[in-house]
Image (cartoon, rainbow, N blue to C red; front, side):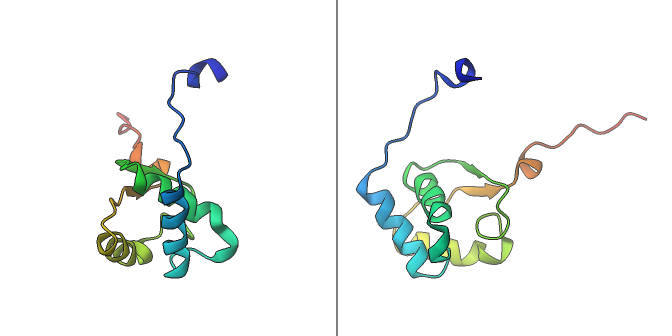
Length: 97
């Protein structure tokens, strides 16, 4: 398993990432007790990821938060990745039977 990820780039934690995470918490997008969720989204926004893949449907892949996220990221000039669950991104091919 380690060999399969050995060529991936590690994204550095920079001060702006923590600042972005704080914006998400301060604007009630993420609860204070789940700072990891805010940082996860902050990384994806800061590094302009196309997708943020998550199983977290409470705080991240939550359709009710999408417009609020769009507004906050637009207000602060941040990129907003498409937030999806793995099932939304990787669809199984149709069954031929």
